[in-house]
Image (tube, rainbow, N blue to C red; front, side, top):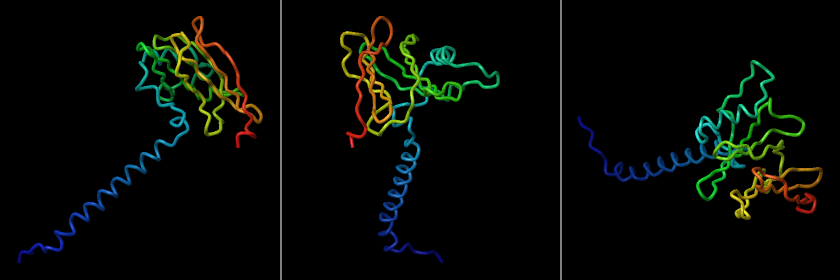
Length: 186
């Protein structure tokens, strides 16, 4: 005997579909939150491999990676980058070379390259900053240079020190330093 579809079952179908849709949406949102909560993502750093051209990425590794250990080789997929678009089509790339062979007492190595492969800044930095201070910040104006100034923040004793680097004579040079007490900012 054939079962006849009950009118009540058909009326409940949109409600069941809505619950299914909300459940799927919730899973997608929770998955996105789980994978986007890393420190690097919050600072604007993402994997360099799909973004940066392979020749530039290989040059960065060649220029900056210590080959002290023959068995240790830096995987280009582990390098992180933050891109800074520049008017006129050029770009700056801030590379995070946070690997055991590029970190020490002073922090981890961060290097800035132009889109055409010129290293213009190299710093050892620590990531331990209060939430409201990014490791790198980009100023909107370029002050007559082809690149905007970069503000690099670090914690020193009970203060956050922001160092401003501006492009001059082919590289980024320190211009000024601002110290803000962490005790007064609470």
